[in-house]
Length: 399
Ligand SMILES: Cc1cc2nc3c(=O)[nH]c(=O)nc-3n(C[C@H](O)[C@H](O)[C@H](O)COP(=O)(O)OP(=O)(O)OC[C@H]3O[C@@H](n4cnc5c(N)ncnc54)[C@H](O)[C@@H]3O)c2cc1C
Image 1 (cartoon, rainbow, N blue to C red):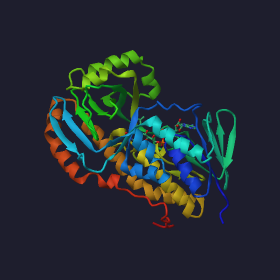
Image 2: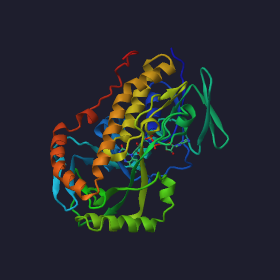
Image 3: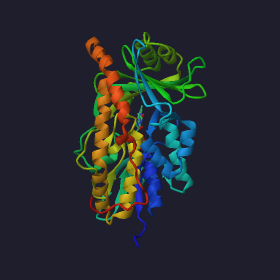
Image 4: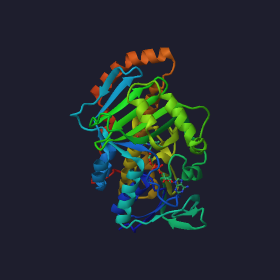
């Protein structure tokens, strides 16, 4: 019998608590260490959990509250900056592509389930360093404390400290040239269309919105932004200035876009978009990386959270079924790399298509997009959404 192995999990976003839950089920003893001192459940706007990611939440038994609070997305409806319908992907009667949910709510549901199952989550534990021996790893935190376990899983997001420690020569995330922003509002006069997420190729910037049954509106936009801004750089710009700039961007776009932006309640959330296409190594010694820490995907494909969830489940299966931590990590990378890289590339391509700005590009995009949407509709992205992981199926040692 394998003796219980203690897993140090760095980061309590999406991948961290999900990995902890699957590892506990597989007989390990996980502990989660999160840098933040408290949880900000309003951080980070909203995201889509694709039906591939929903299957993982389903396996964890936490899909109920996500479906209840979220917005099941069946149709993506695209319009040009003049208001002309360019086409739809999906139908109102079709299976949902996924569920759109506030990012902080997804974090909360996963974290609370981990706590409910007695998994310790330690806050204010910002990882600074790791030291590994042949059979153990010690994590050192900014508050002067440390923790020792059998292996460590870096779930600390796109700017992962774990990655910089274990793979100091790893490629850095690349800035896509775009920033993302958005917010929430209410509008009784704006038509509610269950299951439909609207996408508008605005005159100056891309815009997406949905209206929930209770009238709450979630919206986001993207625009080109120079340099290589960090989140802090963007946050240093006063909120009033962002409001003015973003309202100006959409002033001449079709109804209800300008109204939604103008009525936004509270501050706009603004984020730079980075992604990370490929990394040759995902692990070193007794440490491995999952989620955004090793393959960040831009938000265009709506797959970042889903891939982090899939990673968590596949890694726990590998650790359960394969003898030797390092061999399990290698098998995990082998099972996941091709799929996640394909999705990161796909998401990048959508981003480029969205951001035609000169009139000739816009003309051709509006001309060709209906054909592209028709063919996309036919294929329904089954390769991305219909990915199944069976918890009970044993991972073979060789693939
Ligand atoms: C604006 C925006 C929109 C997005 N839209 C979508 C979308 O539509 N669909 C989608 O699937 N994804 C979307 N994403 C991406 C999605 O949020 C991520 O892909 C997903 O959260 C990845 O999960 P993760 O657990 O790997 O990383 P994260 O959720 O980023 O979690 C990382 C955690 O690690 C902690 N941490 C960081 N450094 C340390 C340290 N040194 N020590 C300890 N803890 C640390 C952080 O505080 C955080 O809690 C979006 C992201 C943003 C910012």
